Length: 334
Ligand code: COA
Image (tube, rainbow, N blue to C red):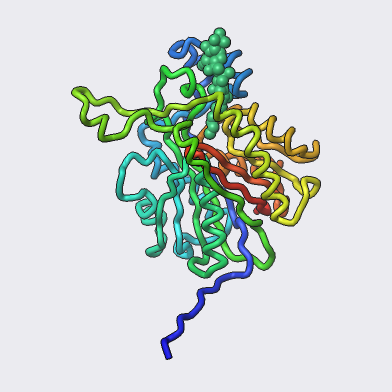
């Protein structure tokens, strides 16, 4: 008789227990970047809704911003770092191929030997992290999971590229996911479309860069119109599926926190999902720019702080970007 294995089991339900964020100190208005891209404040606001963004200073590293955001989330959740047994960091701007940044962040926070790893899914990374975390809590492979979305995109931004220089920015946001008596995180709807792998990417492969006589740091490049079309149409279907799979309707929704890519994409999604006027919509992109993996927790935390998202509210989170990759879920606001 072969030995049988024990089935892992965790909490019946998972929830977001706390949220925190870190915004870099330096506010950068459109006026500061328009000359390098032959643009104007008016054009940028009209095409993207962005008025200002934040650029990290030398001391505001990926690790520093992550630790600050995570401490805020832990405090909000009332959880000690020692109770965290998994740290998941979504980022594309930790500029070391290896090791991942998650173990160093966990160590600085004072977590006790947690599993710690990075997710490379660009703007979709945070919501993918929430999906992974809630599955870990339910399966029993972790009890409290810190999910951090963090970017220092200015390190890989071409300040003269008209298609990206006014969009991307820096920051960090974090949530604690843990056990709950009632369901706090609906099923995650996620996926990718590798046929559109080229739409948002690093300009060059590292091997091609170092083969050059005078190597130049690769930067971000994006096929803006194609991304705009994909995000506006395909992502509203993903959002509606997440609502349906959570067992609710758009009328039950209180808050909509989409990836802060661009105000026009947010508006197009809200229209095509036919969100009722009562749903409060995150519009953090206007002041913060597009911070990729950090944008959803930054926007959610701001709504919580400003009382626009209240404890117990139902919020649709959706994130999408390079890959192309996406993830969405309905969560109860902590
Ligand atoms: N400032 C001023 N004018 C600009 C400009 C800039 N930064 N970039 C392009 N233009 C001009 C072009 O020269 C062109 O002018 P023309 O009509 O006289 O030839 C016109 O604007 C349209 O250019 P195009 O490249 O087609 O821009 P667009 O209409 O697609 O707008 C974006 C560009 C980036 C605003 C738009 O594609 C977009 O919002 N994409 C989604 C980006 C996004 O949010 N990505 C994040 C997803 S994670």
